Image (cartoon, rainbow, N blue to C red):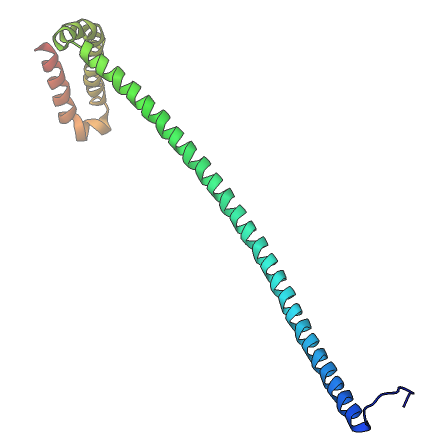
Length: 166
């Protein structure tokens, strides 16, 4: 004994010492439980922080997707609006042209425009028919052609010339 003076007997001191020892063990057990709880709490805080970071990244991705979609939709709407405006202008011009178009007057004018074009075509067709008939007559002079096709070629030349004389 260390020289402490007290009024307790040895059994009381042992009981109090055992109680203090048990209390100290209980407090160490409680401290270890609090350490485990603190460790779990820090793990949850880390998980919450990581989850918040991922949610923020996902929201950023959604925001960028929304911006891209809005820009694409805006461009598409602009293109449709421009095309609609162009179509409206074309339709307005078509309506104006149709309102100014007089069928009877145009039918009278068309004959004046077509006759200068038709005359050279008719002359060309006559020249083509005459040269076709002449070529047929020349081919009948060849012995190889004359044997097989002379009646056809002569009939063709006669028909063309008769058609031109009518």
